Figure 1: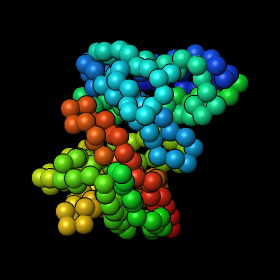
Figure 2: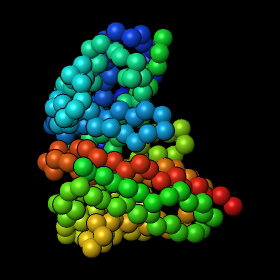
Figure 3: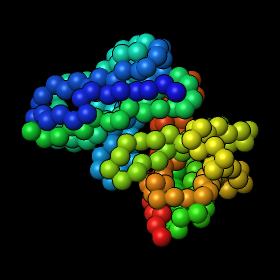
Length: 107
Length: 120
């Protein structure tokens, strides 16, 4: 199975900050990497697919980059509604493993 | 509009089975794969398996093989996920989710989740 490791596991930031979350795969997954946002008590929401493509309706302050084993999710200017947990998921092979999550909290 | 509506919360005893449903609407049911993902309390997301409603083929994570069965009913646009031999560690919120773009495998629409509690 491909292991997905996110860092950091949690971070504190202020509104307006630039936030970066990293995701590393245990082997190359090309660009088969998606990012999700999950608010407490809610289902996950797709933000980025294929490593860098913005899902329809998602604000442009979200962006993704990377290929192979190393990927990044960036929020250019953190907004109050962005405080949530973020997950990466590889879809290169089965099982479709997720990272452990990165929680973005208010400083 | 695309919707996935899941069945209601369940309480089960250890050793029992559960069968959850996920009713799709707003799109062609047989054209999009459906995945099942679960989340234990306070934990992360765990992929369980996938069903192709168009061909009735399935694939599941090895740790669930032998315990999980995924089926679909095209007449009602509903997929089902049955998990047997339940144990306390199966207590979780179970989500169904649709693959929007097949080549990327990304999950673009999710059900609201079903909470399953396993306790004696």
